[in-house]
Image (tube, rainbow, N blue to C red; front, side, top):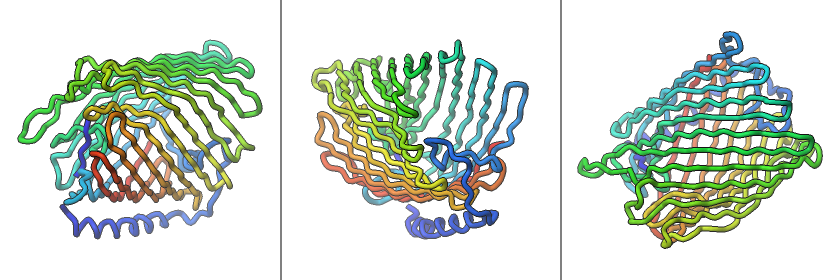
Length: 428
């Protein structure tokens, strides 16, 4: 699997300097309202808080609510192919459209989201692509404290060119991700439990290689079977301790990949952890455990080791949220003779409600990848600043600037990329 992004250097530098200024000015064209805190919800980021005065109106038909949406965005990217030198810059437009529907009855709730994206490049038109999505999930309450849940999703996705396992194709690599799940949730006094079974199918289209050859991406197709079970105990207030088991079977129908290896495997992850809440001001989840993935090919072996997942939300005031994430785990990404990498990811973000309808955003990220059976080590740093302007009912303007740099040893690719993004979106 491999990624692709790709000059317009003089014009690109000017846009990179000008657009943040223009976006900043646009965001100040608010209604002059003072910052105003909505009634806070325990454990909720300011970014996710409801703003009733700016919420979509929607349409109702019986128990159903319909919220169609449409959006348009522009992205300036100064390195669309993620190359270490001779960078190619371009302006990328995206049209997003879709429909969200929900139905709420006494014992049954359903949610539907379907739509698509049309992406066009101004100059590197060979990178144009379309995406689509369909998602339906539901919940049926059998008895108080006992519910059945289910979900069906299907996506048509263009593989990002900076993906670890990106296909080195001239045109975007398209794949389809389809999965279905069914589960049960039980809450009984202080005890709670859930169990979910998931089937996932990933299938790739062939893509175009050098000299207009065809790249056979069949070896990347796979089926995945997953079981996820959790048992928890609410020991005080909003604090909940749990133990979780996740098992998987990954089946690649084509027996060997391009490197002559068998990628099919079986694995599991066992974690213990807790959801914590300190007065509603600091909330989050910590989970630690052990995971392993046993591959059919003995030359790949069995990556195994500890895993850590920490997510923290701190709301020092009703107008400000600070988030933090620390992850250490194994990520599968078939690349040459390596099945994947051990990932260390650290992120810190902040959201501030400057005005009732203006939010400011910032985030810092660090990612380290250490590949199994490979000397490659990647280090990636990223910084983002942006904002959200709520204009009217369901009408939102989003903007952001992001800087990202990767430095690698042992076979990876160095790159530096700057992007400026602006989007106008309307939900009816």
